[in-house]
Each structure stands twice: as structure tokens, then as C-alpha cells.
Length: 257
Image 1 (cartoon, rainbow, N blue to C red):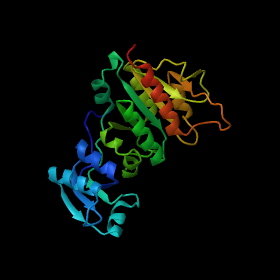
Image 2 (cartoon, helix red, strand yellow):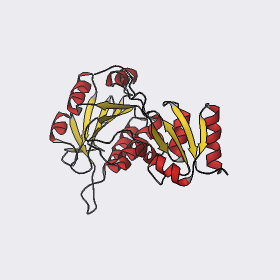
Image 3 (cartoon, rainbow, N blue to C red):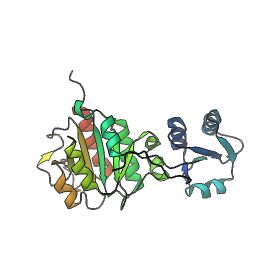
């Protein structure tokens, strides 16, 4: 595993929507090239974005609604977009080394074959809100940190540490050697999320939208947890399930009293 922080040189993407743009400007983790708005008579939100961009020394330009739609590839731009470098990624080594795993503060979210940007964005937002240290996403057969994910996360992606790995099973094995417990979310678990101990250094593994955890990933987890259900449908979607488990972990980790 490389120990270097990575980003793709000389490539650009366009973040769109008020919250992703503002959070990217605030976080300062990307190289910012040009802010775009779709009118000369700016709305209050557009004014805030332009003022923040100008403070950062970022150029601004006005496009037509059709031009900004074409630049974003989406109708959900809310009249503002920004050309940026890709979100930088971190190595597993740096994440684990910097998160104080021995004092119980390490909380990682591993995603196994999540392909829907809306699901990933919702998971990112919840993980950020509970204070998770990082998300780990496979490089293949999974959605990455694309602009649609930042939009779905309401900009939370801009504050989230992300690690892309070639092999999720090998990553799980490496984490276990480092003293991190690995819990997989599965309906076939022997204990519910409310019975499980989710304290201490923990990596939560959430499976894909269609089939959940892949068999080999499930096999390498230290233990599995399920979410009890009483309705007629047999499961929650991936982002809702992740939210339940992450907030139970958050609750268990709160100081007594």
C-alpha cells in the first residue's frame, strides 16, 4: 500500500450545487480553478459563493443556463458550479496511524460494491456526521468520489477522508493485523446491531445495493451484525442500513453519564 496522498494531476471535474461548492471552497482540499454562475443578477446564494471564491483568489465567470448545465452534466446545479481537481485520497497506513486506534477513536466505513452515487453520498454524509475517520472504497466495480456523490452528500464529501483500495479483502486482513475489529452488516448475522459491541477500533463493512456483502468479504469479517426488521420488506437500502449501524456505534462510544 502506498503511503502517499494521491490526486490525479492535470485533470478537472465540475462540482455543482450550492452546498458542494461552498463546502469545497471552505474545506480547501482541492485545487479550485473557476467558479461559474448562470446569471448576472446574482441570487443571495450565488453572491455568497462568488464572495468566498474571490477571497480565495478564484476567478469567476458567468455562463448561460444551457452552458452551465452542459459543464455540469446535470440540471441540479442550482445556478452555481466550480471546476476543481479530483478529491485527494489517503493511504490506509496514514489513516490508521493518525486516528488513535488504541484509544478507541478509530471508526472506519468500508464499502463493498456500492455503485449508486446517491447511496454513497448519503453514507458519506452520515459517516461525516457521526465523526467516522474515513471511508474505504474499492477501485473497481464501485462508485468513487464523483461530483454526483458530493451533491448527494450535501458537500460532506469535501470534508471526508477517502481511501481507494485495489482489494477489499486484503485491506480487511491488514486492518485486523493492526488491531482493528471488522464488523460486517448482514441479515445472516447471529447478533443484532443493538447486541453487538461497537466500541474500540472498528471498521464497519457495508455491502452493495443488490447482494450485500460478497461471500469472501463476509468470511473475513470478525463478526456480523444485523438490523432487526418488523415490516413486510426484507431489508433497508445500503445507506439507511449504514446510518442505523453508524449511529448505534456513535451512541455506544459516548462517554458515560
